[in-house]
Length: 229
Image 1: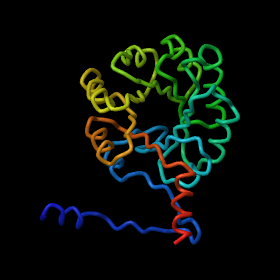
Image 2: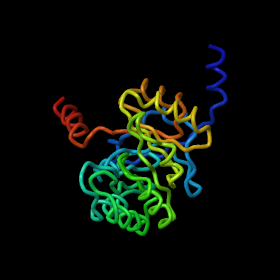
Image 3: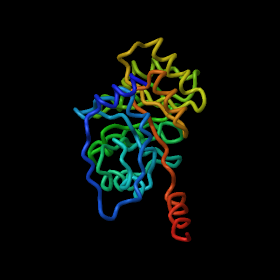
Image 4: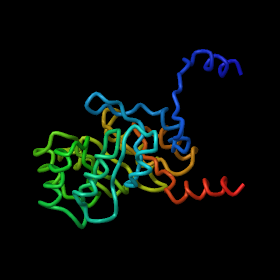
């Protein structure tokens, strides 16, 4: 009890300025802010909102946005996300079905539109990572989806950040990467849906956490239930 009392005493008061109208706001779990963060262009990023829903992006308090989606990357989608977001955006540019020159050109377009980094899928070849990293001046973020992925070769090819998304194995994979590559490698990891899984991922050594927010439909459902009461 004494330690908790000391922690509360040492915490600085944070003034909170709220909107008169914006009461429905998506807040990322506080456990995320226990990680170290990654400094990108002098901005410290700990939380990444995994969404392309512009209404959700505009009404969430995450440090940044990870706009990765299961369709062919399109400039119009990237442009919409970047133009609406008030925080740095990391844009998916393919690497699986979409790869080669298209992924390289998408990366350049993303940088020119103001992206803070580009995210490539786990099947991408090392030579494409090398060509992207030589062309653009923002970090390439390589997705690592299983223990079978050669994360060392992706890093050596030019990826500045590893994005670990291995479902239930994410914390274990983060620990393995830390063991193999040391503390200096920057790691983003998927935190899962519970505070327990997020804390486990933070404890495993992730520098930043990707958070999947509730959808607009889910938020709207909660709102309508309140209205009915």
